[in-house]
Image (cartoon, rainbow, N blue to C red; front, top):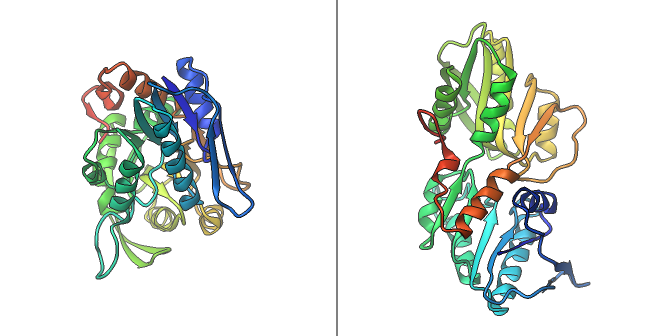
Length: 314
């Protein structure tokens, strides 16, 4: 088994390798003066089971191209099996035609991954679970929830209610509420533009409660911050937000700094530096991904990685 990493999140790849006692594969991933990506695999991969760790986070197109070229390099070097490990799957929000004459980019990315040589996919917390059906190869879809549950249990938050910031996240919020023995509430929202949303109503009792807002990702933080403001106005004591992927653009950072969210809990699927003025707790999913890689390599079940007592994480 060989594990390599692109430049999107080398720290996570190193942690994954450390968690299962496998050295990170040696490769050169750089750029020519004209901006084209240069890749050279610096060790033998003939007949090996190869895993390439690459989050397709911003700059998304650059990281995707790195991944495709690395896959082509190991395929031409006669690797027996190639598994892209995508802690964050870019373009996942473009999973359907919601307007005339628009693409389904998530499907296009799936096609490109297979064309580049992928034999199976390992990913985490897809924005839309139906993306698994865009592939005709095996997809192992993990969830960061077990890692986040452990942290939330350690906080021992009393009088807790789990809130979905939109209707689409009810299933995830229900799983958190079930695991944490908490009540469930929903925020109804209206999207005003691609970067701006307005929370309009709360379904459920949140007055005098400590609120946990759960979502799969945030970039401009419009959904989270507008929901948090409404929840505070309706009498919530505190608001903690929890997302698997925190991309946080400049607009998102500005909104988080000015929001009433007390803590943002996220994972290291996306590399980021410390953000001044925002209380972010970053939990590592390296152990989870490492165990999944070890089980896939050994042809063992990965089901137990997203199950908990009494149900599943989704």
